Length: 157
Image 1 (tube, rainbow, N blue to C red):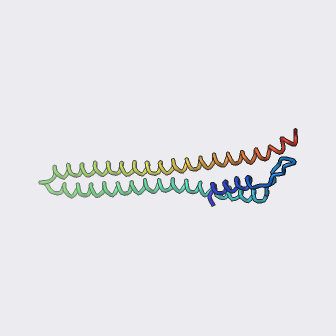
Image 2: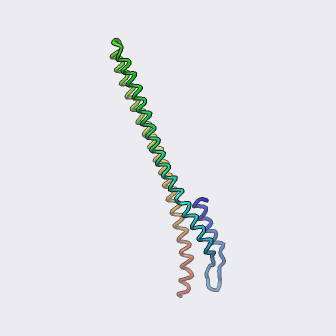
Image 3: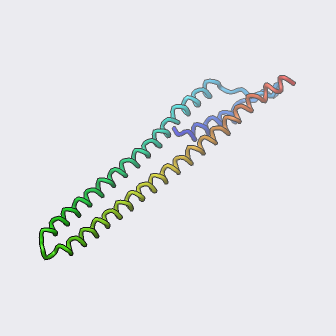
């Protein structure tokens, strides 16, 4: 179950709890609340693992991009060396090899930038989701704490 759903369950439990009109307090099932809080704690690490997986994906994408760039550069250099063997095509081969290498380096930079942008976007969305979940959790916790303090304040009065 997702953290949002568990927080909704907690809120529903508070809303559905019985009120004691004479003492102006609310009765809640402590075991149910404890179970929901335990489930929330169990589900938060899942979202943390998801963020770590995104970072690992970023590393893999960058690594794959580097390998692809190296392979392209290697092919370009081999092609350049093969062309150098021919006396008639030496100048043309050098120009073509330099063009291929420049193109490969440009392509590698583009792939790396695209990978970084993609991973940054995923991390940004994950951060926003985690922040929203945390804010929602804090709000609901404050509601629980206020409900808990309200009867205590009335007892003091």
